[in-house]
Image 1 (cartoon, rainbow, N blue to C red):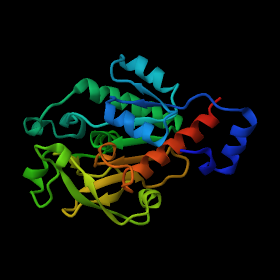
Image 2 (cartoon, helix red, strand yellow; image 1 turned 90 degrees about the horizontal axis):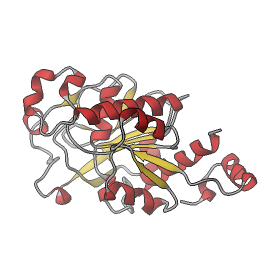
Image 3 (cartoon, helix red, strand yellow; image 1 turned 135 degrees about the vertical axis):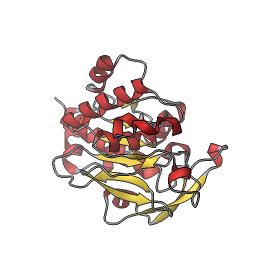
Length: 254
């Protein structure tokens, strides 16, 4: 990531005020893959694992960051989206993680901070904003597309982007093979969101704001860009743009 790709105003600010402090990105739960995905795009970025902190402390720490990455993990508790009766079809759940993610999303959106959600992160964005989830893809949608495998690092399928969309403008691709590992997905889309990518079985694979004016940069993707080669247009460009938006956000902070 180079400052040359920043808009002229941001570049002028960097040149006139000197080298800014390192940009920090908060992760809802950090793993080596997510941290490496960010650092492959820009090694200077500082990452902060918010998971181990009490929720109020995590929210405070996020306020010192310039971007929020909602990472993958356990199933979102179905009671969060009106399907508490279907809990038995879930695998692992983590109510603390749900509460933490809700608090982090609320804070990030209030600050108009850039937000990217990956897998569970995309799902909980949709739920937070009023959407629902498919509780179990094989049981509810079928097996036309394999979204989850025992060897999760060798699980792939095609994703098609939808134009016009923010995602398509960033990745500049129509259809690409991605790495996948999930048995849940977006079902009812939150009113404020649109689908920007889909798989061949019709499942939503990516989400973004319907109306973007005055809102934070926000993207959710169901696949795992952090496990993919960054030369893939649905991996590297996403990290680059997320970091670019975080840098711009940091330049606006007092």
